[in-house]
Image (cartoon, rainbow over all chains, first blue to last red; front, side, top):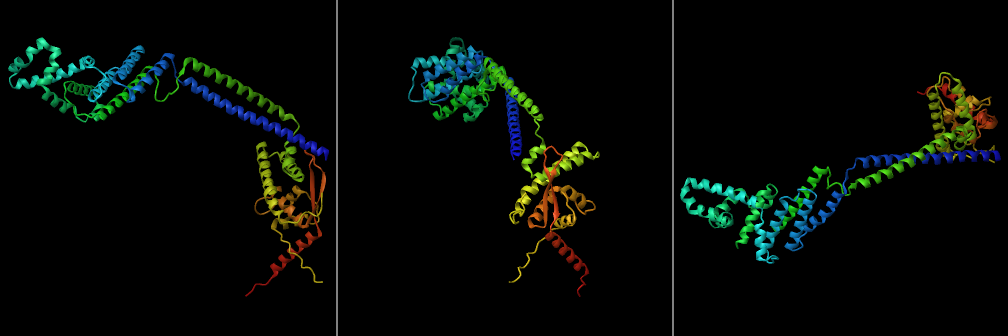
Length: 375
Length: 109
């Protein structure tokens, strides 16, 4: 009995150690896979200079502030200025055109409202700083149309009567006034033909034309007229502009640095990437060490003197072990059977025996009397 | 005192084969298969197939077993030898007689 108990203890300890080593082997393999995946992903990630991360940190709050409808026109103008300064500082162009348009819309919105933070002089000063080149290009195209029409009637008479005195003396300064006084009808017709009144749809298609539209409304408002637009619609426009600025920034970052601001929330600087790589490398070394050690101990366990038959004593009755051993010896002595064939046959025999003992016999014993003889 | 009616003992085909093989012999599992499997119609039996039958027959008292010497294997497991009891022999002869009667029974109609 003591020999049997010692035998069982030896087998039990053998398999416990083997199971522990196997779990360690599998665990360290999984850890190694995870580490390799992390290393691969980290090395593929873009590392960006710290300056770009600084830029992102500076610009995002400003865009968020502009996107909200709070704040006076002066504060919002300051934000626009800051955005332009950041754009210049980091040699970016995303704010080009957009910041002035945004300001025009905000200015128009403010002008139409009952409250106006700016004095008359400040307002005039701001209107003066409107993008002159675009305004002039529109005026010149309008004038071309007017001239073309005049050619059909009496070009010389119209030119002498309307344009020449003003061209020489008041060219730029009063031309706007002149346009307003004499060509307002033509101007509006021109706008109606080329700039549909449904500006919300039109806005996304042609920025330049929308800019002109907005300036015209601003001009009308400055002259004391009320353009037929709603304040809510202007708010929509300013929101659209903020979105366009964000898109322009993302596109520029993507083109310049290969970064997609919509996907990458946390960029890695070069230093952070190095730190991450070092951490993953250390984990990789640790997991490989555990893997090699567990493999080494598993191999050493092979010569512990615990055989499959000894292990089988736990699963099968004694007589079954002796029968299996005898069957194995017979198969080995038969030269026709290869090693793999013998293994397959033995595996099949063991499976049938397991099913017989643990299922069939267990069920039948419920209906059979107990054994009369004791071993 | 009325005679106690003998409880009928059911025998499957494998049970019959085993009782037939063990009649007048004392064999262990692999030896029984050496007698049963040659020329047997259907799939050859394995020890796992006859183990439940041996267990069943032993518990019904139709066969009895004894432990043999230690085997030559590394585990030192002993072999179990089986032989038929008187009850087993009587059951087997009842079944064989019935088959003879069945074969000799005239056809009806």
